[in-house]
Image (cartoon, rainbow, N blue to C red; front, side):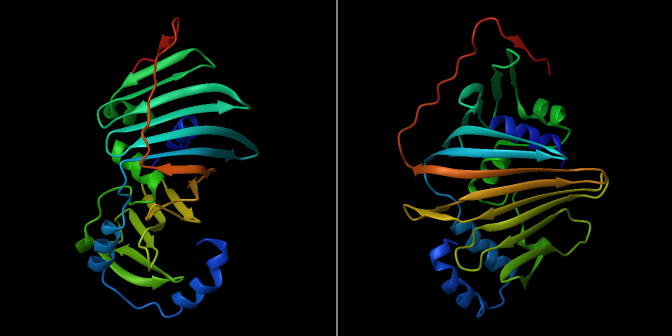
Length: 254
Protein backbone atom coordinates (compact mmCIF):
# COMPACT_ATOMS: atom_id res chain seq x y z
CA UNK A 1 0.00 0.00 0.00
CA UNK A 2 1.25 3.45 -0.86
CA UNK A 3 1.10 6.59 1.22
CA UNK A 4 -0.62 8.11 -1.83
CA UNK A 5 -3.84 6.31 -0.86
CA UNK A 6 -3.98 8.39 2.31
CA UNK A 7 -3.88 11.57 0.23
CA UNK A 8 -6.73 10.17 -1.85
CA UNK A 9 -8.89 9.35 1.16
CA UNK A 10 -8.16 12.81 2.59
CA UNK A 11 -9.11 14.55 -0.61
CA UNK A 12 -12.32 12.56 -0.92
CA UNK A 13 -13.08 11.82 2.08
CA UNK A 14 -17.33 0.48 22.78
CA UNK A 15 -19.49 3.16 23.84
CA UNK A 16 -17.82 4.69 26.92
CA UNK A 17 -20.72 4.12 29.33
CA UNK A 18 -20.42 0.36 28.72
CA UNK A 19 -16.66 0.13 29.08
CA UNK A 20 -16.64 -1.64 32.45
CA UNK A 21 -19.13 -4.26 31.30
CA UNK A 22 -17.16 -4.94 28.13
CA UNK A 23 -13.89 -5.47 29.99
CA UNK A 24 -15.61 -8.01 32.23
CA UNK A 25 -17.15 -9.85 29.26
CA UNK A 26 -13.87 -9.97 27.38
CA UNK A 27 -12.09 -11.63 30.31
CA UNK A 28 -14.13 -14.79 29.58
CA UNK A 29 -13.38 -14.74 25.85
CA UNK A 30 -13.34 -18.26 24.43
CA UNK A 31 -11.08 -19.48 21.66
CA UNK A 32 -12.65 -19.94 18.24
CA UNK A 33 -11.68 -21.05 14.74
CA UNK A 34 -10.87 -18.71 11.86
CA UNK A 35 -13.77 -20.21 9.92
CA UNK A 36 -16.31 -19.49 12.67
CA UNK A 37 -14.97 -15.98 13.29
CA UNK A 38 -15.14 -15.05 9.60
CA UNK A 39 -18.61 -16.56 9.28
CA UNK A 40 -19.81 -14.36 12.14
CA UNK A 41 -18.04 -11.35 10.67
CA UNK A 42 -19.87 -11.93 7.39
CA UNK A 43 -23.20 -12.08 9.23
CA UNK A 44 -22.46 -8.75 10.91
CA UNK A 45 -21.32 -6.79 7.87
CA UNK A 46 -23.13 -3.53 7.15
CA UNK A 47 -26.52 -4.56 5.72
CA UNK A 48 -28.39 -1.30 5.11
CA UNK A 49 -29.18 0.18 1.69
CA UNK A 50 -27.78 3.64 2.39
CA UNK A 51 -25.65 5.58 4.86
CA UNK A 52 -24.98 9.28 5.25
CA UNK A 53 -22.58 10.98 7.66
CA UNK A 54 -20.61 14.14 8.29
CA UNK A 55 -16.91 13.32 8.54
CA UNK A 56 -14.17 15.33 10.19
CA UNK A 57 -10.77 14.37 8.80
CA UNK A 58 -7.37 15.27 10.16
CA UNK A 59 -4.39 14.47 7.96
CA UNK A 60 -0.97 14.55 9.60
CA UNK A 61 2.45 14.02 8.06
CA UNK A 62 5.78 14.97 9.62
CA UNK A 63 5.30 18.42 11.18
CA UNK A 64 2.16 19.42 9.27
CA UNK A 65 -1.54 18.67 9.64
CA UNK A 66 -4.74 19.64 7.88
CA UNK A 67 -8.42 19.41 8.80
CA UNK A 68 -11.08 18.73 6.18
CA UNK A 69 -14.86 18.31 6.50
CA UNK A 70 -16.52 15.75 4.23
CA UNK A 71 -20.16 14.90 3.66
CA UNK A 72 -20.39 11.18 2.89
CA UNK A 73 -23.27 9.36 1.24
CA UNK A 74 -23.21 5.65 0.42
CA UNK A 75 -25.60 3.58 -1.64
CA UNK A 76 -24.33 0.15 -0.69
CA UNK A 77 -22.60 -1.66 -3.51
CA UNK A 78 -23.39 1.10 -6.00
CA UNK A 79 -22.17 4.57 -5.07
CA UNK A 80 -19.85 6.54 -2.81
CA UNK A 81 -20.50 10.30 -2.90
CA UNK A 82 -18.24 12.77 -1.12
CA UNK A 83 -18.29 16.54 -0.85
CA UNK A 84 -15.30 18.12 0.88
CA UNK A 85 -14.85 21.58 2.38
CA UNK A 86 -12.01 23.44 4.07
CA UNK A 87 -12.90 26.14 6.60
CA UNK A 88 -16.45 26.04 5.24
CA UNK A 89 -15.41 26.57 1.62
CA UNK A 90 -16.26 23.76 -0.85
CA UNK A 91 -13.08 22.30 -2.33
CA UNK A 92 -13.96 18.95 -3.88
CA UNK A 93 -16.77 16.66 -4.95
CA UNK A 94 -16.49 13.00 -5.98
CA UNK A 95 -18.60 10.05 -7.07
CA UNK A 96 -17.26 6.51 -7.04
CA UNK A 97 -19.02 3.43 -8.42
CA UNK A 98 -17.72 -0.09 -9.11
CA UNK A 99 -17.00 1.04 -12.69
CA UNK A 100 -15.89 4.66 -12.52
CA UNK A 101 -14.17 7.32 -10.43
CA UNK A 102 -15.01 10.99 -10.90
CA UNK A 103 -14.03 14.05 -8.94
CA UNK A 104 -13.40 17.75 -9.40
CA UNK A 105 -11.15 20.07 -7.42
CA UNK A 106 -12.37 23.63 -6.96
CA UNK A 107 -8.97 24.84 -5.75
CA UNK A 108 -7.11 24.24 -9.00
CA UNK A 109 -10.18 23.89 -11.27
CA UNK A 110 -9.38 20.39 -12.48
CA UNK A 111 -11.44 17.22 -12.79
CA UNK A 112 -10.76 13.52 -13.19
CA UNK A 113 -12.79 10.79 -14.88
CA UNK A 114 -11.54 7.23 -15.06
CA UNK A 115 -11.89 3.68 -13.82
CA UNK A 116 -10.16 1.80 -11.05
CA UNK A 117 -7.38 0.50 -13.26
CA UNK A 118 -6.26 4.04 -14.06
CA UNK A 119 -6.79 5.16 -10.47
CA UNK A 120 -4.72 2.24 -9.15
CA UNK A 121 -1.94 3.23 -11.52
CA UNK A 122 -2.18 6.84 -10.39
CA UNK A 123 -2.00 5.86 -6.69
CA UNK A 124 0.65 3.20 -7.16
CA UNK A 125 -1.42 0.54 -5.39
CA UNK A 126 -4.40 -1.67 -6.18
CA UNK A 127 -7.71 -0.13 -5.11
CA UNK A 128 -11.35 -1.01 -5.76
CA UNK A 129 -14.85 0.23 -4.95
CA UNK A 130 -15.39 -2.62 -2.48
CA UNK A 131 -12.12 -1.84 -0.73
CA UNK A 132 -13.03 1.83 -0.19
CA UNK A 133 -16.59 1.03 0.88
CA UNK A 134 -15.52 -1.66 3.36
CA UNK A 135 -12.79 0.59 4.75
CA UNK A 136 -15.42 3.19 5.64
CA UNK A 137 -17.93 0.69 7.07
CA UNK A 138 -15.64 -1.37 9.31
CA UNK A 139 -15.56 -4.50 7.17
CA UNK A 140 -12.58 -6.46 5.83
CA UNK A 141 -11.17 -4.42 2.95
CA UNK A 142 -10.56 -7.52 0.82
CA UNK A 143 -12.22 -10.97 0.73
CA UNK A 144 -10.71 -13.27 3.36
CA UNK A 145 -10.60 -17.06 3.08
CA UNK A 146 -10.47 -18.89 6.40
CA UNK A 147 -8.17 -21.63 5.09
CA UNK A 148 -5.36 -19.09 4.83
CA UNK A 149 -5.63 -17.94 8.46
CA UNK A 150 -5.26 -19.16 12.02
CA UNK A 151 -7.05 -17.56 14.97
CA UNK A 152 -5.90 -16.69 18.46
CA UNK A 153 -6.84 -14.33 21.27
CA UNK A 154 -4.75 -11.16 21.41
CA UNK A 155 -5.51 -8.12 23.57
CA UNK A 156 -9.05 -9.39 24.17
CA UNK A 157 -9.81 -9.54 20.43
CA UNK A 158 -9.73 -12.33 17.90
CA UNK A 159 -6.57 -12.02 15.82
CA UNK A 160 -6.63 -13.68 12.41
CA UNK A 161 -3.03 -14.12 11.33
CA UNK A 162 -1.85 -15.78 8.10
CA UNK A 163 -0.54 -19.33 8.07
CA UNK A 164 2.01 -18.15 5.52
CA UNK A 165 4.18 -15.48 7.11
CA UNK A 166 4.51 -13.75 3.71
CA UNK A 167 0.76 -13.16 3.48
CA UNK A 168 0.16 -9.38 3.78
CA UNK A 169 -3.08 -9.29 5.81
CA UNK A 170 -3.91 -9.42 9.52
CA UNK A 171 -7.25 -8.75 11.21
CA UNK A 172 -8.33 -8.05 14.79
CA UNK A 173 -12.05 -8.74 15.23
CA UNK A 174 -14.36 -7.83 18.10
CA UNK A 175 -15.35 -11.05 19.92
CA UNK A 176 -19.04 -10.21 20.38
CA UNK A 177 -20.27 -8.14 17.44
CA UNK A 178 -17.57 -9.36 15.04
CA UNK A 179 -16.72 -6.06 13.41
CA UNK A 180 -13.15 -5.21 12.48
CA UNK A 181 -11.24 -3.51 15.28
CA UNK A 182 -8.01 -3.29 13.32
CA UNK A 183 -6.76 -4.49 9.95
CA UNK A 184 -3.21 -4.41 8.72
CA UNK A 185 -1.74 -4.71 5.23
CA UNK A 186 1.99 -5.27 4.87
CA UNK A 187 4.10 -4.61 1.78
CA UNK A 188 7.50 -6.21 2.48
CA UNK A 189 8.95 -5.15 -0.89
CA UNK A 190 8.42 -1.47 -0.06
CA UNK A 191 8.77 -1.99 3.70
CA UNK A 192 5.38 -0.38 4.23
CA UNK A 193 2.56 -1.17 6.64
CA UNK A 194 -0.96 0.22 6.32
CA UNK A 195 -2.96 0.02 9.56
CA UNK A 196 -6.67 0.82 9.87
CA UNK A 197 -8.12 0.96 13.39
CA UNK A 198 -11.81 1.36 14.31
CA UNK A 199 -13.13 2.80 17.56
CA UNK A 200 -16.44 3.60 19.24
CA UNK A 201 -18.78 1.59 17.03
CA UNK A 202 -22.33 2.95 17.12
CA UNK A 203 -25.46 0.80 16.95
CA UNK A 204 -27.80 2.50 14.47
CA UNK A 205 -30.99 0.66 13.56
CA UNK A 206 -29.46 -2.69 14.52
CA UNK A 207 -26.30 -2.28 12.49
CA UNK A 208 -22.92 -1.10 13.74
CA UNK A 209 -20.96 1.68 12.07
CA UNK A 210 -17.62 3.15 13.13
CA UNK A 211 -17.55 6.16 15.41
CA UNK A 212 -14.00 6.91 14.29
CA UNK A 213 -11.28 5.46 12.09
CA UNK A 214 -7.53 5.89 12.32
CA UNK A 215 -5.41 5.10 9.26
CA UNK A 216 -1.67 5.28 9.11
CA UNK A 217 1.05 4.23 6.73
CA UNK A 218 4.57 3.65 7.97
CA UNK A 219 7.57 3.05 5.77
CA UNK A 220 11.33 3.37 6.14
CA UNK A 221 11.37 7.14 5.99
CA UNK A 222 8.03 8.59 7.04
CA UNK A 223 4.63 8.10 8.63
CA UNK A 224 1.34 9.59 7.45
CA UNK A 225 -1.93 9.39 9.36
CA UNK A 226 -5.60 10.21 8.86
CA UNK A 227 -8.11 10.40 11.71
CA UNK A 228 -11.77 10.23 10.62
CA UNK A 229 -14.58 11.14 13.00
CA UNK A 230 -18.15 10.13 12.05
CA UNK A 231 -20.95 12.50 13.02
CA UNK A 232 -24.70 12.75 12.28
CA UNK A 233 -24.85 9.19 10.95
CA UNK A 234 -28.12 7.92 9.47
CA UNK A 235 -29.01 4.77 7.52
CA UNK A 236 -31.70 3.70 5.05
CA UNK A 237 -32.70 7.26 4.18
CA UNK A 238 -33.46 8.38 0.63
CA UNK A 239 -30.35 10.12 -0.70
CA UNK A 240 -29.39 12.19 -3.73
CA UNK A 241 -25.96 12.22 -5.38
CA UNK A 242 -25.59 15.52 -7.27
CA UNK A 243 -22.51 15.90 -9.43
CA UNK A 244 -21.70 18.31 -12.25
CA UNK A 245 -18.27 19.57 -13.27
CA UNK A 246 -18.27 23.40 -13.47
CA UNK A 247 -17.48 24.98 -16.81
CA UNK A 248 -13.86 25.82 -17.55
CA UNK A 249 -12.28 23.01 -15.54
CA UNK A 250 -9.30 21.15 -17.04
CA UNK A 251 -9.34 17.35 -17.25
CA UNK A 252 -6.56 15.39 -15.54
CA UNK A 253 -5.09 12.83 -17.93
CA UNK A 254 -4.76 9.19 -16.83
